[in-house]
Image 1 (cartoon, one colour):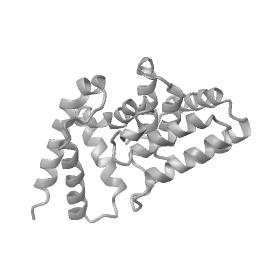
Image 2 (cartoon, rainbow, N blue to C red):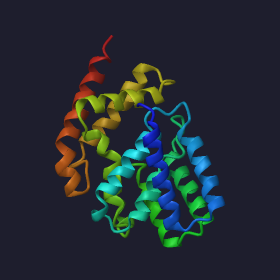
Image 3 (cartoon, rainbow, N blue to C red):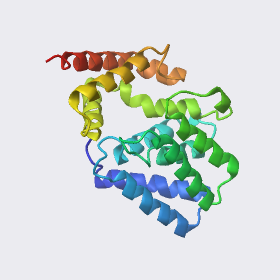
Image 4 (cartoon, rainbow, N blue to C red):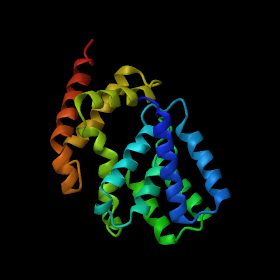
Length: 224
């Protein structure tokens, strides 16, 4: 994916400053966390899970703020949900949740807010809404923000798939295609991809079309 422009980076910084003000975070701790987050998301191995993804979700959070019970929880979850991202690991979501809890504790954040943020991040592991976390009312919409990329135009979706594959450059092609097809097929088997009526109406049809097309392409290139 394309790196952010200077104006987009300013927009991102403004979002961060606004979150820190709402959390009433100590400026020193806020700057420490800011610097660490930026180091994480700027890693060269990231091609999709980088600043552009974070900004896209923050824009959704602003656009649909009237649909959110606690926008603060969602904003914090967006910033931290991919902060740990290693394609060779299997616990990125859990480790990202640990980091979110650590920094929110450093900020002196209320425990209920911290718990809600952690629940949102943990749920991205399978992109499902656990019944035990139904007390986090914004979790379904947060997950829909994260999966909105699936329902974008064919051109945007193709750029997304290329970025994902670049993050798995170390996986042999035949193994990558098999693993990707398995994941995408599991999504198609779901009764619906999106949890909220709003995002279902917006993206369900186009997301299924995009996924089916990618599976067809992966199958085509699986042949010798």
